[in-house]
Image 1 (cartoon, rainbow, N blue to C red):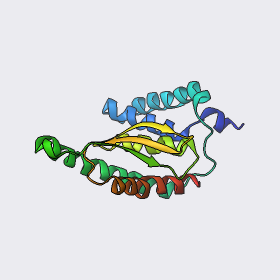
Image 2 (image 1 turned 120 degrees about the vertical axis):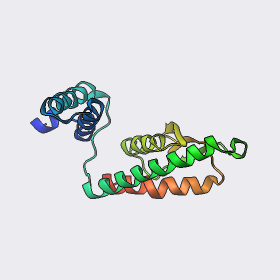
Image 3 (image 1 turned 60 degrees about the vertical axis):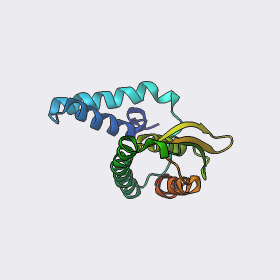
Length: 165
């Protein structure tokens, strides 16, 4: 185990913690970033035994494209949910949907479930790796197969590309 692997068992999580800390502090000064980096190193260090093994491959270009897609979908979904909530709520077709997974990697499944939960109007309920399915709830799901296809093409396929599985 190299010093980098020991010090940064989850480098993506470390970067996310630093960014989140800077956003919460509403400051990008040296002290804020240093404290965020300290938290970003210490938290993954103490929780590393609970994490699945880190994927061997990571494609940064595909990850950046996925981040843009997720950000766009979050913005669009916010307006869609606002329209549903502020409009006629009697036409809503809420459903529980099982999204089949094309991967055996629990890391990819967990990130997929997190993306689904981050997007307004959908919520991940459970990941069943034995059946290879993510159970989700959709606020307004007129066509179940359309939702499944959208999740698989917009999120799961890029995740598989990012992590090489």
